[in-house]
Image 1 (cartoon, rainbow, N blue to C red):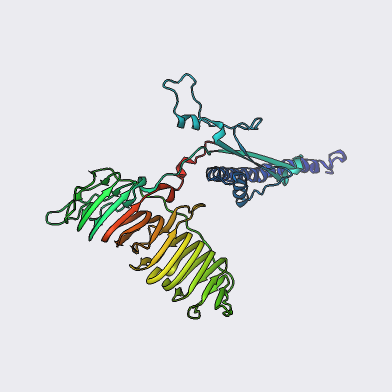
Image 2 (cartoon, rainbow, N blue to C red; image 1 turned 30 degrees about the horizontal axis):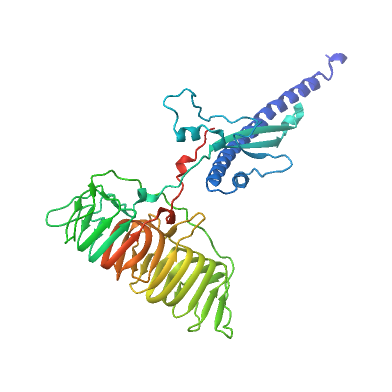
Length: 484
């Protein structure tokens, strides 16, 4: 039987209509999933950008650029034409959408709100990041949709935040939880801690016929502190203390370990070079990778600004070295100053990999401003008769930080001081035994010393002048929070 002429072509109409429906479902499935995925990524980018902006604001840095940089790291590059990454304080008029999630205060509150509560409720202390993302459509073009727009916002608290001293502001702090003699004094000396005191986090108790407590005296000392001695465990009065002891509070609560420090990360991609000596016996070292460096005896060695990477260590023996605006990376060997002198300003020393640490010999002279030593590996050993004046940075991310060893580095730090030595800044090494030997009126120690254990030894006067403004005081990251 032949089909009727008027029924021809009906299948094509049905197929065409079905194709439209098929493309519609494809658009819903494919374009819809792309839009959902982009929205999730944009929200993550906005969240991290808002946190970065808040941290930058607290540090008095460019918070707008910090937010844009973080958004770009997550794939959302700022476009001035569309202003697709907007960063504003929440008290800006006409903000669209307005900030949400900020606490409110009842005007009739009794008692009146505290200053902290007022700051938490002030829109001037919150930053909003708004990201607008436009995605071109694929299958949705069949149904007349050419693009999709995602708009996400994130709000972070960036109010007034005061940096806090580490270890509750104790000039000497041993962070070990259980080690006997976590703070131990030996030798014959006078210890005077100005503007602060001593803390031992150890819960060790004294044992008969021995000391082994949380803090123990093991020599003939006169101890003076301006605040008090605090111990989680017991204070063991051994040795032969001279005069009355300062206030001692036993059985206090453990304190939290200081936060870890994000160490710098630098490297070299090209070989360094050493110039021949000029008429004044000056040698210039260019930045880059260095093997085993040797210099003419008595030469003046100038390290040019930049990053210098050492795979065989660096030993200064008789040279006069100048290193300003430099970064020293040691992946093997030791940074050793046997004699001669090192003068530096704006210097970071990073020891990692197979690096053996930093040492200073008996006849060496070190005079450095704005310097920080970071030791992922290796130890620190500065001998008794060295002459040094070293000062931590007075600004930047590492303001007040002189020596840092992460908790994973358990090598020792030994610092010897005398009347010709000065040191300002925090020594932070919660996994290490720190020994401070003071002889012949060591009075230039303007530091906070935080270790796993702390040993004080020597003869003469050991004076620690604690000024919190000279020490490392990081911002507590817990106060920087997302509210939406």
